[in-house]
Length: 301
Picture (tube, helix red, strand yellow):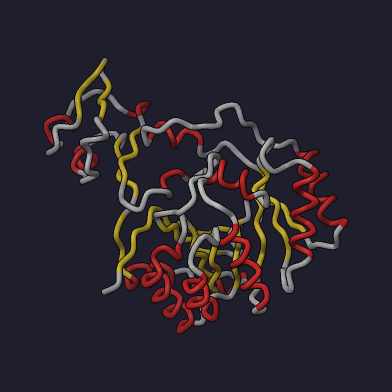
């Protein structure tokens, strides 16, 4: 039985492809973008998420932890994360659900049962299933079986990918994917390395290869003020996009701060604490500039 590690299933999604969709979020990502709004997606194993504002200091988690990783400090439980193995015992005894393990192993059959419940909504809206993350292609066997199962049921599939995977991985799934949501951060390789931790060469090469083979692609660009929102980069992006043999459109996704609190819950610092979302006016200017190049452009995705 093929299994995979996911951290969320979002029902009735309308921003991850056409129509009403079910989005499965895979755990594990090869990029570590400084602005990532799903930091719980990055690690390829389960993690403890702790909401301090929910903790009532009852202490039930302290004796429950088999690793002796938890102590009470000032009426709030504190975890020594170097000792934590994310076994979930503390979450099981937490009365207020201040403790949660993000990341659970699921089977293809389990996921298909959940997906198939929503088939009436897909049929009515032209929707389907979106595989997101994290990077779904890091769990290739699991993803392939899900794609085959969806294909057998006539369910539309979209794959949200960062593209930083071997071409062989993309090539093995592309005929079973109806739509690629391809995330592109930056065209400058040095800046890409600084802000995501990896080069963009493989990402760009894979994008060109997919486009040359006629795959349906929506290019998704998160607008990060001070990182990729300057006119020079937007013009380079537009020129690159127009040179692709096939592209449905470019979706502009304004940066938001919805995921900032997750970092403290995971025991990590947020490295861009002063970063604010772009203004509506700036987003409109970027959209207008991209449209000058003859590109179809959407906002939000």
